[in-house]
Image (cartoon, rainbow, N blue to C red; front, top):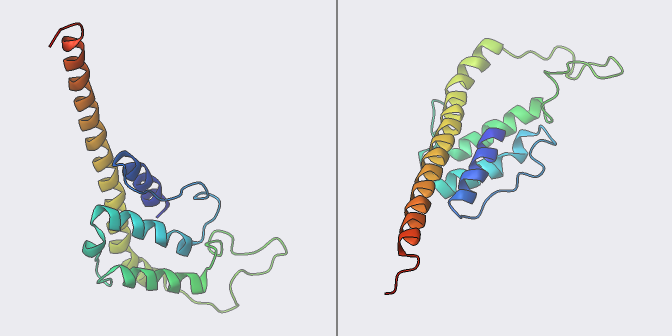
Length: 150
C-alpha cells in the first residue's frame, strides 16, 4: 500500500493533478492511514470503480478488510514482534489465526495491489517518456526557428 501511495503521488505530480502527501509515509505501519492515499490515487486515475478481487467487490470491502486486520494488529507490529520489550505477548494468549486460510484469502488481493504498483510504474514511465519526447520536439523546433524573421 505504501508503494501505491508513493508511486501514485509521483505519477499524479507528473500528470499535474492534486497529489497525496508522502512526507510521513514511512513513519508508521498502520494500514488504515494508507487507505485514504490509495483511494485518492485510484480515484484520480479512474481505477476506483474497477477495484475488485475474489472476496472484494469494491473499495469499501477493502476498507472493511483493513479494519478487520487492524482489530488483530492495529499498528502492524504483532506478527513482526510477537513479544514486547518486557517479554509480554503482543496478542492475547490462545489467539488463533489460520495462516493458510488467511493466505488464500489475501493472495488475490495482494496480486491486485501488486498489479496496481506495476501499473503505476508503467504509467509513470510511459508519461515521462512522452513528456521528454514532446520537450525534445519543442526544443528542436525552437532551435530551428531561432534567429529567423517571421
